Length: 342
Image 1 (cartoon, rainbow, N blue to C red):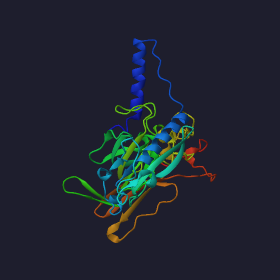
Image 2: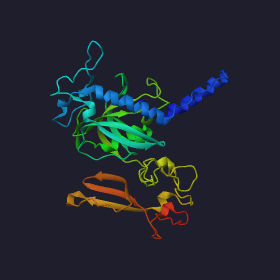
Image 3: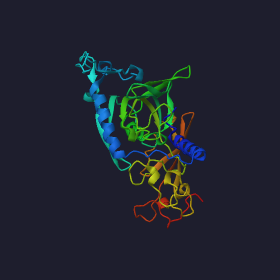
Image 4: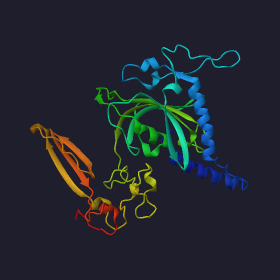
């Protein structure tokens, strides 16, 4: 699966460039294109595609459990001179440009426009940009060539994916419910279903995986089934909370300036007390046999684990503390070194 191999790919390219240089000292790596100029070209290409392609919209007018295999995107017919003809069977088909949502974002100091076709919102919860998602997907180029796809639902960490996925997955919801079948498969009901149309700058840009050309615009059809919150360094603070400036890029948040972003730093403020020890721990026991309800977690309180046995739910949480009431949690202040777990 290529979606999650961006970092490994970049490393591989570095090794390749290094190897080439050993054999040929005259080798000069290609200069990466200007992102603003490339986005202008990508926008033109994507808009032309959306204006000249349609999908079988009537199929999705009812029902919530359609699949990506049912999404059929076709190019408008042409006459003998190569001019596009009107939309065929408009009662059942719709031009993509008429149904997509146009979205914008700033990424790497460049303004991007990208497009989403929402075929079913989903009845569950929406993932955050740092969550794991369980999906089916199919990725293709504008010439319809498929370069990557899944056969069965696959779980992926959104932080390992291209920027376009981190932007679009949180705009959809997971399945409303699911049933585990006797054969090991799972049936999902009312899940997110859509298509994303990405400029190269929100995809692989100049460093694509095998099967994708540099600066390629990409299309992904997807089904979003489930999601799960991540705590990448397991310090008790969910990774999306470690994004202190709210730009959905947790890799540029480094409280103690030690070149380790908070989401990977076991001691976020560098005060010698691990982050997990600057949080207060609580254990809740819920007896569903007695009709007890799960607790509502307080602000800054996060579930770490849960077990269920004979109707008894045990939930363990951690909670941030602001002991000096200055609006900043202890784990982000190097001047406060209280260990709440001694």
